[in-house]
Length: 79
Image (tube, rainbow, N blue to C red; front, side, top):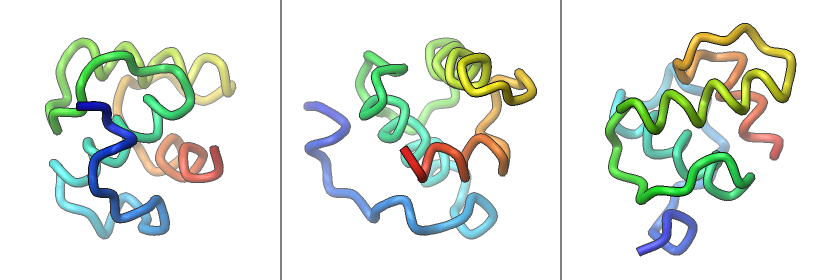
């Protein structure tokens, strides 16, 4: 199943309001929609997800942390 087809809350919440698994899932969905994440969205902040985040951060001149930090999450919301 594709991340984008799964039920989604949308990207209207800021990271601090989501639990960890919710934050990772929202991040994976956004990265998938933008072409940075090519595996199933599984709520795991694993190596594949971290690499996807790092690629997005590099492409958007963000500090490369591999974490769904506030700056990364907020930029992902804007698509």
